[in-house]
Length: 114
Ligand code: HEC
Image 1 (spheres, rainbow, N blue to C red):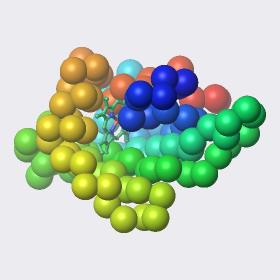
Image 2: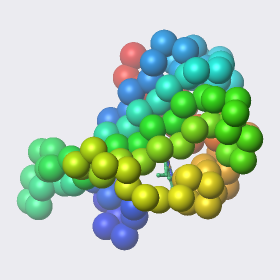
Image 3: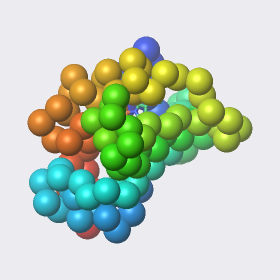
């Protein structure tokens, strides 16, 4: 993503645990406990190399999270502290808009290098 106005400007790496990976393989139907983590890095000016890490986001399937369709959303800054973004209006709002038909997970199996 190269749009500097985007919250997600930079390079990102997606990690899925075993359950989440099964969910991706099933066409985005995720079992309870699935965990997906994304590391975002800034792009170093004038190069393709990874710049400093700027944030980490996580989604874990947790059926107690009724407001957010059974997903726990958490975001952290580069220092590991919670980023303070509101999980319902910020995280869920955007994921709902983009991926309501895909269990609120925007990426798909095609985004993974197998
Ligand atoms: C502006 C819209 C938007 C907001 C706000 C947003 N996301 Fe996302 N998120 C995306 C998009 C688009 C992707 C697709 C992968 C990529 O481009 O990195 C994504 C991917 C993810 C993924 C990887 C799984 C997937 O759905 O593809 C996780 C986990 C995630 N976001 C968590 C969060 C958390 C936690 C927050 C709140 C702190 C958040 N997101 C806020 C748009 C958003």
